[in-house]
Length: 141
Image 1 (tube, helix red, strand yellow):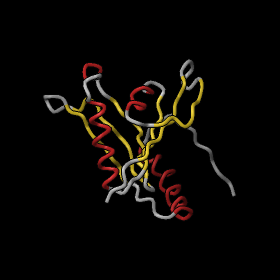
Image 2 (tube, helix red, strand yellow):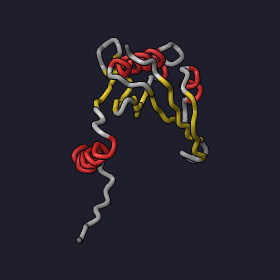
Image 3 (cartoon, one colour):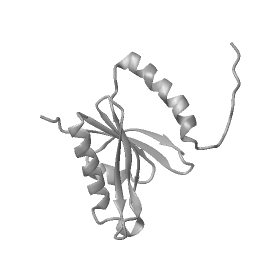
Image 4 (cartoon, helix red, strand yellow):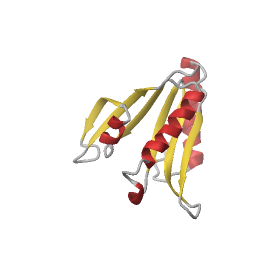
């Protein structure tokens, strides 16, 4: 079988789907249906413009947090905590029992939210340590 290898730096959602969808189908053969669903909490300013928020996915009983951003002028005011609480609450209603996030810049933030560091990666990015966190979520009744 012959393959062409096409390298690009394009961040193209169609290309992502071409790789991700067959991977998800294969994963479901191995682990059963994952129930993949996006979970997004958008932070809007007074004028209604998106200025931050949380982007993640729920699958196989886990909330996977991909991105969390709080604008500089809103930090240390409970905004990030409320974003996380909203995402975690929705994840619990979807049947999730764990949450996962990785960071190199907000270790203390996640620790304060009862996330436990289970691994670290040095120099990622260079000069920083990337930390991998998980948290047990309350079981929905």
